[in-house]
Amino acid sequence: MSAEEHGRRLRADLALALVTCFWGVTFVTVKSAVSNVSVFLFLALRFVLAAVILGALHFHALPQLRKKELLAGARLGLFMFLGYAFQTSGLVYTTPAKSAFLTGSCVVFVPILLALFWRGRLGLWTYASSAAALAGLYLLTVPGGPAWTLQPGDLLTLIGAVLFAVHIILAGQYTRSHSLVALSFLQCATTALLAVAFCGLGAASGWQPLRFVPGWPSYSGIVITAVFATAAGFTIQLWAQRYTPPSHAAVLFTLEPVFAAVTSYLVMGERLGRRSLLGAALIGVAILVAELKGPAPAAPESPQPISAAVDSRNTSG
Image 1: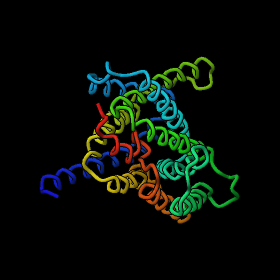
Image 2: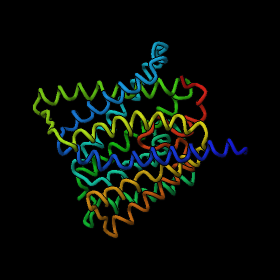
Image 3: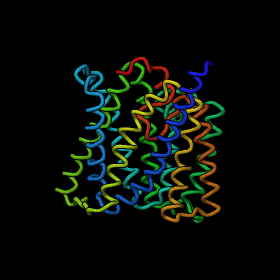
Image 4: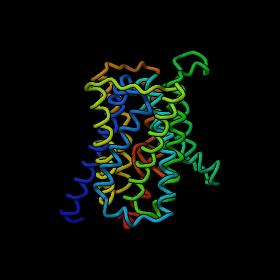
């Protein structure tokens, strides 16, 4: 490897580490924001802003969109919206660190769902990571009593993790034949439209009245998640994964819940007990194994699996 290539790979690794830090920090940011903004209004504002930014950055590619890309982006956006709806709703009732580790477990669900619904095969590493994740989830989410004492926020977040896993699988299929840039924009735009629609439905039915308390937590939560975690995060990731190996990216993405836990400790004083720490450690190991050995490694926030991004990098517009 030449010195130029080595330098470019180092810059790419540092860029992915920065993106992973953004994603980890957002758990605390969102936790603070949704105490002042209703969930669907927060998601609507976040993804409308992100879609506008991505559309402005990549407007040259938008007129070239095909019907198949529109449908693929809409399907990805549907599962992205559902994943974030459950995750963000769960974050109202659980802690940022727990939410991050539970969300990160989505990569463990990927091979299981592939085996159940896409006729995939489960290897030894999949069984090992699944067993570690299951044990970790139990220790992290069940405080010490029977299994049915699972907290509502943790349950909502787990459902969100499963939906993110479906999103990862579909993205792995679609990025082989469609523009990465187009799919990133389309899934954000679809998520924004669905969030706006649910804002209206929630307000009209009285199920979730619109609520927005002006202030730093509300504004910073929207801007940080839309600009840094979504628009900038997706763009940086697409660039960096051209130059860094999937194994590097996988390890870096595994640090997302770690960043979330550290940030939650520093900002909110969240402390995990011994039982929860052991559970978080087991989930962390499971995520790392699934990222390195699984069929479709990805970070929960990422627009597509790492392997798909590398394999189809020449299709980006």
